[in-house]
Length: 271
Image (cartoon, rainbow, N blue to C red; front, side, top):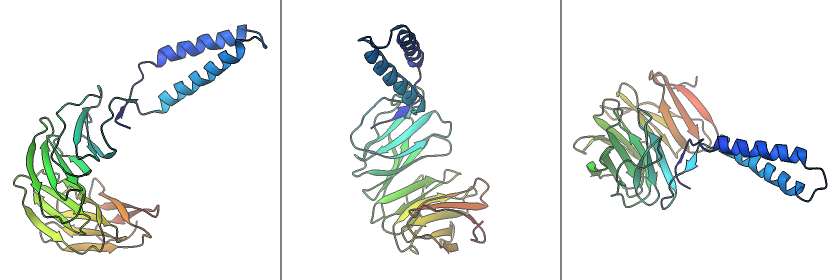
């Protein structure tokens, strides 16, 4: 349906209208021909007020296709959104307006978008099997397309030092790329037996975590590409999302079977 942002500017007018309706309902006697219409208007207005308060905002734009991925910039002032039509748009949170030209180049649905830790770049992974790095302020391609995956790229993320990018793909592999030159520097890593749905770096950039359709989670050493923890098992369905804790001590993962698990990042034991 499009992007939604906080928008409460019209609430005072609506509240005033409801107040007038309430007074009119009290004054007009039961059985009057206008009473039923007033009550209907009052009910509808109250529902509208409730919906606006509960909503995350007002619809500003309706691009083609569904929104497939969203991410906040580190300063929370912008949002990047990837669309089914292969386009990425960057929005100002307060105004709801786009702040760059549409980021175009992917030839398939944009499955994952993420800002760099300094907010200057956006990395994207697409159904077209490629990864791209864009200037968050200009909309220009900075690096890419990064090619090597043989299936849809499902998840991408920058390292905290901005030097590396990790990607997970439907081809069951994980790759680590040099963010500046776009070459694969680690991988492809092959131990998963299903689509890799989610990937992320540890805060110290020593490790990568991945979650897969094969119902497992793995922790990889960035330098060697070896699995150092895992496979972490116990899920009854595809692992769709994984993340390190900010201190790097724990891993959280969520699965298709409705389970969320927290693991010790060193031992692989459930917490």
